[in-house]
Image 1 (cartoon, rainbow, N blue to C red):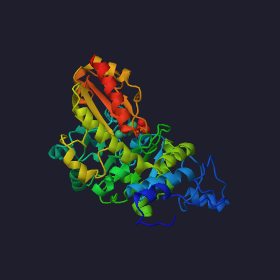
Image 2: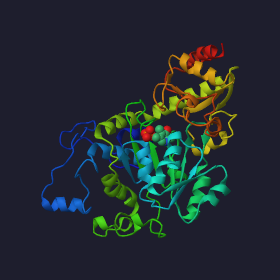
Image 3: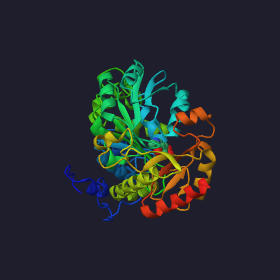
Image 4: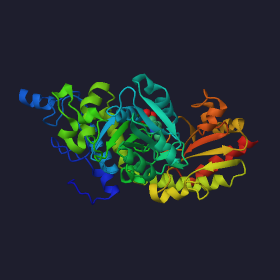
Length: 430
Ligand SMILES: *Cc1c(COP(=O)(O)O)cnc(C)c1O
């Protein structure tokens, strides 16, 4: 396919980045299951190692199947380049790595995927980095949290466990004024529902594990570069603006312009951190992305129907879904994620902890698992699983109170899902 900026999302999700295999004409992108690539000659090898020529050396850095996926996700997000990696959590480290150094901090939203809260509040300390957690609805607090050592601002578009949408325009206005890149985790929305770069994001990170692959077969991640940030405007980002000793003093921003972050992430990040996505996983994700818009439309339709039904159910205390008119975040849907508020939300049961246990154990179509964004409908009772080590006060603060169940609505028949929820709620209340 030739580059056509006018192609629509449904066309790009199938074709972007792919072309018939030059060696065989294979129509589908082959799985290049190879570790290394033969150099034409010693001069070719030298040019590749000096980053003077783009090509394939070794699959820790680049692989043709993974490259198609990188171009596809970058195109769907409206970015200039992307780097895939082994998981969503790897993507978060890969996004921060070129920006941070010991003593530097990242200002992050309090509304984040539970695993990300742990990664940011505990694990990154071992690199000498720190995270400052702030309520991203409080613009003054976000602004106040940014100091001379801040190197990034981080939030989710539609925040896991659902029901909350970040005002990306308001946050990017603050990060722009401070000269700091904004990183948006777009996992729960996908580029079909939300395009963070259009709202001022510098980098977009994904867990490809969820809706992008879509059927619970792969662990993968991706960092998309908007190409819009001026890494040389201050002395805050020396990894991108200053000479790199491992490449004979090459300056990434000067040499690669808008692709500086992407090239740095491959040449330094994947080279030395080694969080590489394997070509088989890239293949499954490419298959998934071909139907992304169709699936997301159905996830949203089902979620709207089911959240609306649950809201009127006598056993249910609250439903937090931004797609409901009752949600305080409903106003942000049209501006931030115009095609819908996603397929993820939480419910609180009047019956409390025991009632939730009975509920998740009684479901027949829904599975009780630590995953989301699958074609199949999934639930998790966080208080007895992912958040069980926390005190009750911490559980409440994390949106995982003892009576809360997170629901990831699949693409099955809505009437069957409603019938399943209904019978399980009846048993939970008995
Ligand atoms: C699952 C998830 C992650 C982590 O992704 P993994 O692929 O499990 O490492 C990060 N952010 C969000 C919003 C997620 O849902």
